[in-house]
Image (tube, rainbow, N blue to C red; front, side, top):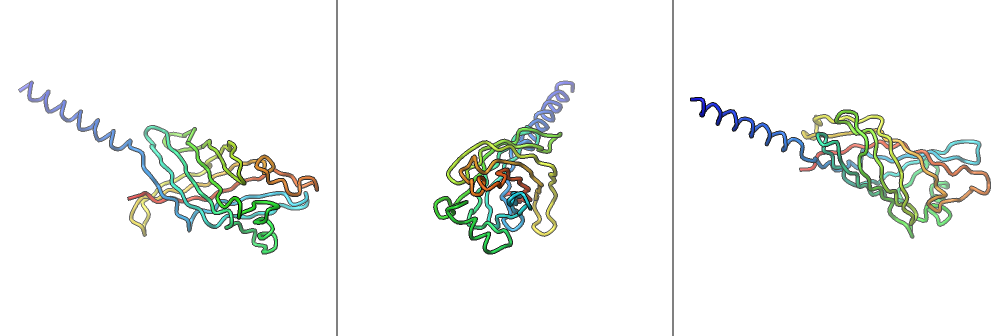
Length: 195
């Protein structure tokens, strides 16, 4: 009888361990392009702040909450830039600035580097913009996952912030006229669990 109890206990422990390993597997989320908008704020001659966004974004996020790890792989259509001001938007697409014909894609590839419990709070990665790739750190201030009531699958969302110097990426238009080159990012992102 004791042997049988030991076998049952061992089997239960193995089943629990196996279930734990399965739970800890990384989960892939596809970014929802209709709910993901990288926006930014940039100086305009020191007299105002101009804000714009990119309207076409795609990519994936892989997240393993138990292991406190994960990765980010995002692509942005540079030509989707929108300042809400037609003339400025067209100028931003020109060779003076983003030069979207020569550099149609902006990418960010990174890894989650800090967690609060099982929630990611920071990512470090490489931003490729205007033909230049440099490290950019992102702060994740809000992060939440829910069972999406309409899609009937898990969805996660986050508010993400960061800064970089656009002149470091060769976008230095206006700097000699007194424009400050620092760009502040504010990114709203939502992803849906892949099948």
